Length: 62
Image (cartoon, rainbow, N blue to C red; front, side):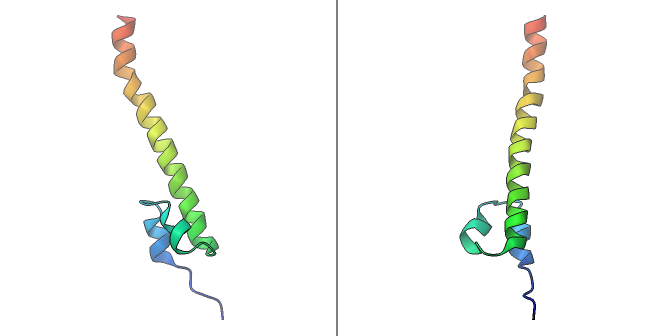
């Protein structure tokens, strides 16, 4: 009988990407969502940084 994937941990992984790393290290389903959560965090920070530079660049160009 196949084990049911831990959907609650996978859903929380998008908010706290390190949670599956601690709670269920062997669950491939949860680890996939932890990786997705980490990538979303990295790209979110990068996008915020780049978009946050636009007002600063406007002042420099004037």
